[in-house]
Length: 294
Image 1 (cartoon, rainbow, N blue to C red):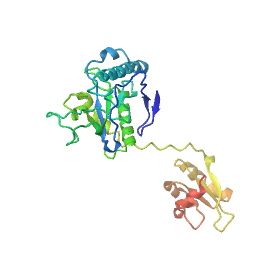
Image 2: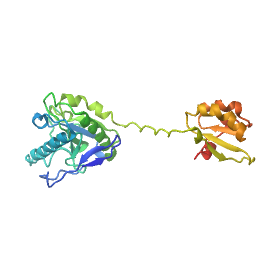
Image 3: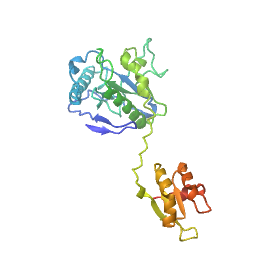
Image 4: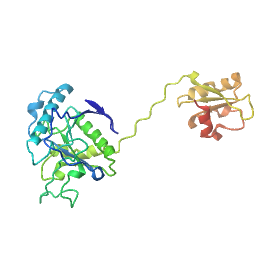
């Protein structure tokens, strides 16, 4: 198991071991320029026998491995109707993503055009080239017809990985029923696909908070605008109002400081009364402030 980095956060990922899970053929190669997003599938049927009483990660992961092996074996038995397991990836109830056909091959999303469900995109004879096929392991029983929280999060994150990897300009998430006359992936999961799609674009990372600062974190740097005896003190951080307000007068008087500069526009006014030079802090440029920071 490895960790796969995605734009929305890491997912746990299992590369396929072909000695354990062999393929019965070679599907056609993927054409990344055609990709539009992912098609979500499920195995359907009953999975209660595999998951009843399973609650820990290790228990769910072990059951997932059995389900993935079963899916590969069942698809392999359908040769020549299908080559290899139909899914590019499978997502277990543990939240682990398993490699099926993988990235380099087309998934099987429903290649037969029917009167009940014409192919999408319109005018094509097969939807396979346009969507990465992803199965989420779920079943028809009420207890298993939805994704687990870990599974849902993994699907969202993996969707962003597909978009980034395929450089998809206008991505979307659809269900198997959207390209084939089928009930897959079930009503509950299909109704949650807009939530999956909302993972893109990912939210920007939260800004890193500045380290806590103490009064003695005031920085002293020499500044020489023609008067070599001037010294500039730079306060950094937004919580130092008490420092500036309480100490500026004393600093100016006792240390002979000619100027106190605050790296926060809201705090500049606090030292106006103690400013002794002709140039107020508001005239300082960002470049000058940057030059005084370390």
